[in-house]
Image 1 (spheres, rainbow, N blue to C red):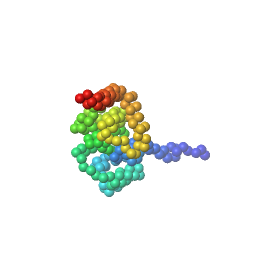
Image 2: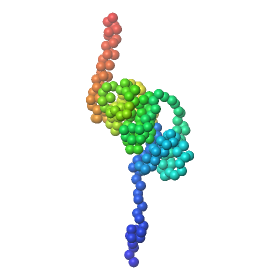
Image 3: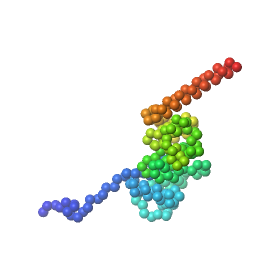
Image 4: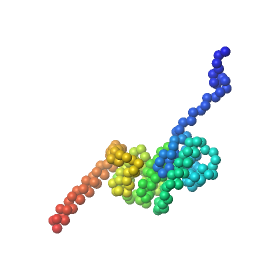
Length: 217
């Protein structure tokens, strides 16, 4: 007797579930999951005011991956010191609903969504950016936005130059991080790079001539 195939035996092949999305909190990856779990994470967190512990209390059915993600978020929220401020992180972005939002400096937010993200600068603090930097982003609902893949490096460069942000301690090789930042800018935004270098050279020339002017008085 010939062995029957699984289909002939009435056994349907099990669908493979691919992890095609991820969940973030406070700029940190909590875990990879399915798009359905990622959407559920955003929906439930929004419904519970962004409190992961409340989601775990009020809802019963989660996949193992989503439950682990929520438990990590709850621990991070419990340990995080809560501070007030003038600006509150955005709930939505040009890339979708915001899953995590890290404040780089007041009014400047690093956001992540289920599939993409970037940096959003509130219009009220856009003056911290140079005119050349503003041209690299795009406006959306009260923010100047910068895609994470290429545009975001411009904002980070601006904040570093103005000492409004420092490279996080979690990045061990800060020199390499900064060089990669510069390489990205030179590749994708050469006009901004030239404007930045020209401004730095002018500032250096002004500093070097200031003592000579003082001595001539």
